[in-house]
Image 1 (cartoon, rainbow, N blue to C red):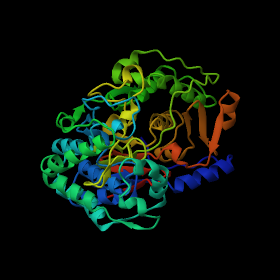
Image 2 (image 1 turned 135 degrees about the vertical axis):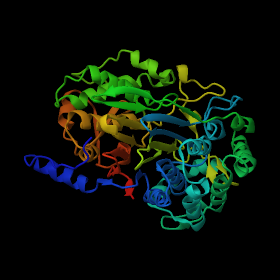
Image 3 (image 1 turned 45 degrees about the vertical axis):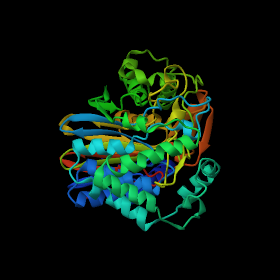
Length: 506
């Protein structure tokens, strides 16, 4: 699993110049005690602070996730979910911090506002993961986020843009008085209610303040806005820590999140490629696109988990079939961490849509997820106390010599696609990790194929019948992979040059 950057051949001068520019913005760094790659620079710094205090990779991941909830409320929050893969001593555990639908059915069929809220699983998942794997006290781990919420953050353009897009929904579902709505880019925004919530969790976990104040407040907010979420739904919630789904990937093993996450779709694609890897570089990207569309035909069946690996997949290796499948959702934030003990974390935190359901909880200064909007048809139809198929799909590669590589990216249905392209670059195209992260990407969505406008295979894809929509390189739609790992007895981290992903080491 080499991590040293290489440069393209000189005969492709124009593409090489672009590639070198991307490589210059791609950071791969080795640490002695810890390494982190996270969706926001302040989250990365919080992880480094935790490593300085003697925390491990799980402590550092939680700290980064908490900061993301403060600085990126459009993407993640304490009213949302967490899914993670954690490697320790050769064993990978899957933390499923997602919640079920309420016991009581919503009125009507539209899943929006309060009726789109499932039990928020983030905080219970923090506590469960920390109890099993953590070192430092939770008060220390959450302090950077709590301090930041109290001190205030500067509203950046990303947050302001998300706010403008969702302002009408936020106003509709109770956030008219939220101070954020009055903030412009560059303004200081303090969150005293969120600060109190974070400090309360740090002191008492899911007991005390969270149980006595936060849970009733979240239930009331959902009910005020058309939902049926009840305190009893929270009481019945349990964080599941289980085994991941695994498939071979060359001389390594690929591990993905089990149900109800759709990470199994990545495993299905990998298994198909294991038996159908005799194609040239000329049609490789076409085959990957067709493979993605084939596996996404089974998205609503993702709750079947590993049993889907036995299904045959139809892939036309010559011509585009325009099967569609993946959707154009975005959102979510990634954190990957690793430490000198070989503990490695691949994680994603999410609200689903920007600002989730837009249901505001004034007592806590947060909004709630709209994960129930992920229910669709067939096996994924809404039912009481049921998990919707979940878009979060963190992944991990393990190999000989104790090598571990954690990969996580935002992008909803784009997550599986981005990861498959990176895995392909690493395995078949002889690329190191830096080159695999910088390489131009595509995304299949809503029946079309969106590509970064400097993608070298555009003509080949058009010739095979794909309908291409070029977008500027680095557009948010192409993901932002957070990578951390353990190799040669050292932790390392790598950052995608897209979005705000940054790395830190200690």
